[in-house]
Amino acid sequence: DESWANMGQGAPETKHLEGAPPRNYTLSIADEDMEYAPTTGLQEMREKVATYYNHLYRQGKNSQYTADNVCIVPGGRGGITRIMACLGETQVGYFSPDYTAYEQALGMFSRLNPSPFVHRDVNEALMDPEEFEFQVRGRGTGCILLSNPANPTGQSIEGEALESYVETARSNKTAIIMDEFYSHYYYDGDQVSPEDGGADDDSNWPKTVSSAAYIQDVNEDSILIVNGLTKNWRCPGFRICWIVAPKKIVNMLGSAGSYLEGGANAPLQRLSLPLMELDFIRRDTWALQRHFKIKRDFLLTKLEEMGIRVQWKPNATFYVWADISKLPHPLNDCLVFLEECVKHKTICVPGVFFDINPNGTRNLHRSTCLGNVRFSYGPPMHNLELGMKHIKTFIDDWRAHEESSAEYASERLGFNNEQN
Image (cartoon, rainbow, N blue to C red; front, top):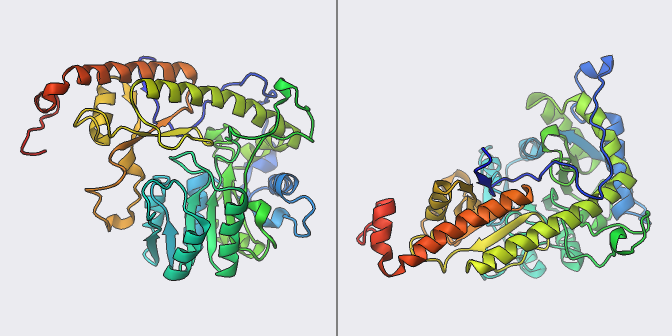
């Protein structure tokens, strides 16, 4: 329905982008690809993934990834589920806010004890490396799960801070599951785009970030990188993703795949091989960053015009973590805001959904995320324009009734003064 604006969508638009290289999605299936693929993926695809990480992040390093360090999985959730299935009885650290699906992943296996890493300062988007090490040591966590860059805030751990996170894992013999699904969506790089006069060759790559750059030994450091075609390659329907990890962990992941989902399908892995060519990736990422930066800037401008604050300007991902706390009551509650959005044919994601609560062990009545919503600029621009128009309409309507907001809420939502 074209009258709806979906800004809750956690997937990028899939159409051709201006300046991007062409893609050939013509599929011819060989007889051998009608068989089950290995649970760790086709050898050719695993080799392409290893080459990608070595070229971008490990040039000049003695320890290099090989196909043995790569496990192809059917989607990011499938990959994280395999990892959780391989963990023994241990504490698994996590952050809040973070990706909503982590709540189910962390609560799936009874032998795992989810342990929240709490920010001492709620105004802190990212945890300081020293604080991170303090919490890892103090909790004795065996594993930490996080997205980087972060969904929903669009913030990124990088440079010396990311190197310190990896060193903390190494020195404390702790694993980090690093969800890097948005590692191509950066908007603050110093590199000059070919469209603006920069070199259009292998010497000029757009900014991307991966913990792979700071690993000393690819078969010893327990950093598990989860990534795939879903976001960075804008092919969510392929459900082709991967985990990059030490060889012994990849072997365990392959075994887990045999009794979980059976592995990624062979034909789409084969179709994905041209998308993993380095020159294609470079050119496509330049086009992606140009296109999505325009949408990000549009959304930030419109939200500011409506009086919706964005505390942390996103320098990555395709999400805006918006602060609605200054809107008229009770519109400043993320669940009420969603209800009004739906009435006006618009979708966003309430902030409380990202306040991860595995097994329902915490009381979220006073969640610090109640005054936030996540807007996605993954969909096409016309979708964003429509959504901003719809939201402005009902915000203006509420502000027109600001003096009697309690009565207005009662009329619209069934609220009353005693409840508030």
